Length: 378
View 1 (cartoon, helix red, strand yellow):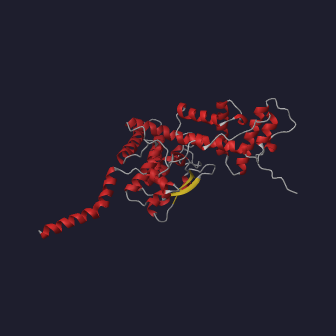
View 2: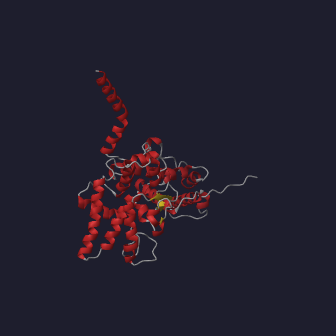
View 3: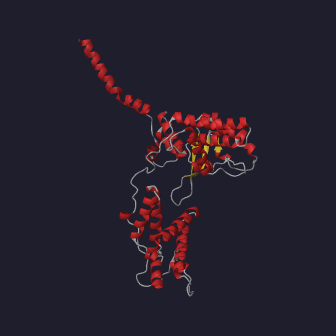
């Protein structure tokens, strides 16, 4: 006797039998979403992953004005064109959206869950979900880096100007005795931390004071020799990845230590774990970091291509120029492959020319030696 396996998300588990629905189409769609949520939950996916996916499926439904059992590849084509031509989204974003719709569609057409049979029973023959996302109507992932080609790291001179300007805002607020000096000092330290440890905005915004710790190999940094990043960039559907970042810049350590010991206590929330506090006792959000960054960048007249992420790029680039081992940099920024670190590296012309001279030195040296020998023979 074969036992029936009850798969989480199966149609017969989500549909209520014997009940007449006033709007059967809407009831079926909501049951599909509940089933998809159950299936994802059984696979260990988190709420933060499932909620945006469901929201996107609802947006796709609104765009097509059709229910999933009448969707076709043409709907995917029209939607993708809308995202690209009208909303001007990046290819990587469009591909992520397409992937979500593909996953929902593949869940519905999987015979083990029974949604195709349930739709035909409810709405008649031929009324069942079909595959709508194929290789020929979705964007393939062909490149390691798909960001804005104009994005680049800070040069050392630009970075120094930016930090100097951030420090000037603190001094200006103190001189004028106006409110905002603490926030200005905090923000200046945030920007130095982003560069000093090569962090992303989300990573730096969620730091706690206790995330800094000692590194026995670098006792000169005291309790700030190592940073435990707990909210690193996650793989799709997975929890945030942790990593330890070793402190390498003494001036950045001094800036954080001064903020923690002398400035942060003045916010007046000693029991709050967060490193970056607001004047109301909350955490500084990534959007707030971005807003302050844009204000400083534009005030200095720096290129608009520069973003907070450009500091992370600069961290990789400047360490590379300084001769730091590539694998060490890769571990510091949390890249699984060296190719990811490579696209972050934009070494300067001076560095490239120096490397070129080193590469050519043996050949040029040998040629000069040969000429010297010929001169002596003459």
